Length: 205
Image (cartoon, rainbow, N blue to C red; front, side, top):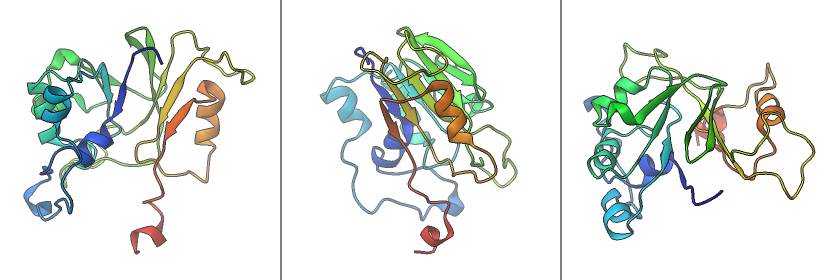
């Protein structure tokens, strides 16, 4: 996908910062193993600068204040793409307001290296405090090469590269969410999808 590198922020927030930043009541939620790489290692040692970072929702395991602060301090992310209502959280964590783009479901942006960033629906919820439940949007994301059509045709070897990030979405049984996304923007070259933490059997295991 050109030289463009998309970072799904769940990877950074879950695996980069050694000390997550939830509220005091959740402070016992700490890592069992050290991170494979820190923000400083990615930026200073490997010299990586990320053209864009998409965030699926505001839960602390996906939007970690320490990671946002570190990445912003090092200017390691050029553009942040977040669901509607999440910009204020990002700014409070240290992100430059000019670098944060809020988007709603089915909204498209062409701000990054000619690539299409698409905010897509998800089945989930949001909350960072007991009093702000579902005050902000949650999302899945697609990143599509600029030459891609907004609706899919038959798959071919010449299809532009594309990537789907599922965030923490569940699998709706009452409406064809993923079929709608696939018909409009698929087929995708690659995808990062959740593994079913919303299923009762998984939660209780």
